[in-house]
Length: 575
Image (cartoon, rainbow, N blue to C red; front, side, top):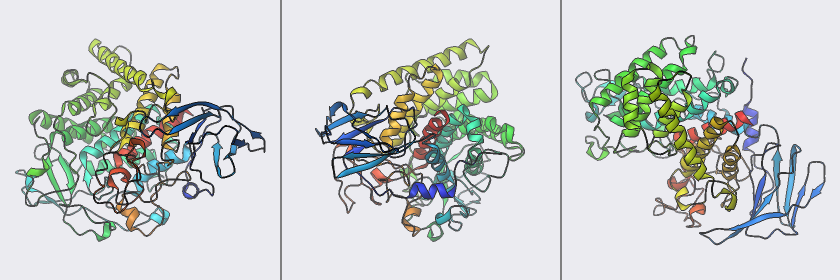
């Protein structure tokens, strides 16, 4: 029987707002493990002689400033205070003079609830079914997608334009109600990275979904809900994969049942087809032990993956160009990409692990990256790199050993560079020390995925070289940052309340879905011309706005939440 580590009651507790808040004291609002590094930052106020910590047993501690740092952008001075000597579990009161106070929590497994909630979010954003186990977030079925039209850009002899197909299930992609193969495949692939490291952890993770009573881990059940949609997105005529299932234009901020636009599958693309091939190849391996619940899926997925890869080999320049779509034109999320070498590398790597066929090894070698980059939907080379690092065993062919060593070396080089500025940074973390760290979806693509890379390198080394740096990124994410926000909805005492997310805006519930990661500070401010509320700052790390209209800084997306799941579940598994 799987261990119950998340209940609806715990989610409700996580969503409650604590009474005390502080503008100057920046700390991890979720909590620390007893043996974990514990650092807080005092923003803009010298705490000398003012800072007091009251322990759970009433003892008063007067910590000293370890160092100070000055922001290169705002010029603000931050004072770094090390509280690592505090190890007793319980609630600590931090006071800065008479007017500023907050709490700090130390407990075993501090990330258990938030990690589980980040995964459970995928249940709440399921498409094509009624949500019945969501408590206040229950809703009737929306977008059954049993009457989907084949757009003229996706037509084939077997399915001419206007053909009606059934393409149900899957997850809503982001703040909108469409479903995109590129991003869905990337999201599953990213979460598979952590699953393959800790299958026993996920076997015990109960997220209270309709499938929780079966013999398959809830994590895999949730992935299967999206994979069932994938099975409908391959054209049976030639094996190519439709780029997305979409309305011509974005819907308004209404509930799914109020959406009226027709839905289409549009243009097959090489990037969607390769991402599909990669994730279906991995799914074929990973689901093999769960034939009782999903009979025949592994064989079907393997065949579809190989057929998709063959289509991509025959159509290497079939990129998605949305501006060419007519009758009707389509204006929803593009997920466009003008190169496919990284997708070829990921798909070939996954298919080699599945089949051992030489052709896939040859293609992987031909498309291998020259340096490690954090995974994004537009650059999936690192997902291919993880395939080789994860899939190693003894007596491998020499070319495989060489490729694996190359990928590990690239990862180690990246991690060594990533941590260089942490010890002198304003918020004591690898992330957030370069203006390039901030931008669209930065908290996922730059913070969580950087931390995931650090944890992977740490695991490979077996020496815990990078673990504390990954934990520092969690501290930043949960409140030790320039805005003081815990950037995950429903957790901490200052978290986003108005994400750019249609169901959260339209469901009549005051609090948004819990467990959502928002995009984060974005100095590009691509939405500023349409906002009623202006950004409060142009500084890179402060350019965030918790308003519904701010799609540039406050939207949510499955790929961002996938990075949160991959990161936090890994941390929870090792703490």
